[in-house]
Image: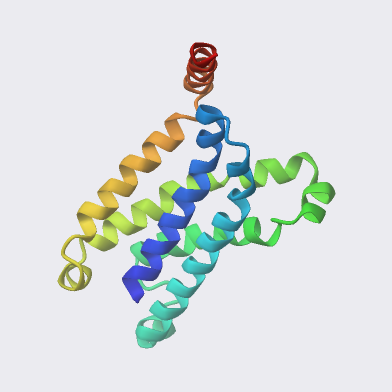
Length: 172
């Protein structure tokens, strides 16, 4: 469960990041309503992943608050997701104003940090013994994250939106 909890956190985070491109490319506005639940799932899976890791290696975590730099990356990713999860309500959006959007843009560095954490962890002998395909799977997650981040570059985003409009004109 240690490894799978982290994988599900990454999968949920990627799912959350996928919603905006689905709206941009296909005009599926319903996808935007799924962003918040997917982001909360990512936070919950990440929190459970951390708790299970702390419980499984209590001695290491008691001696050192963060046992190594790989765990440090995971804690850093969770530290970014925590205020985002805490402010994922309409009330927080109204109360924080423009700061809400700025805070929630931290999902991009959080994604890069947790993928880095997963890549480094997948090279760990303990993880490799448990899941020999972890490195390949995390590499795929990195490729997906790269595409999802590239879609957010303004030039790329507008080109994709134009493709959607051209496709819609052909359909008429």
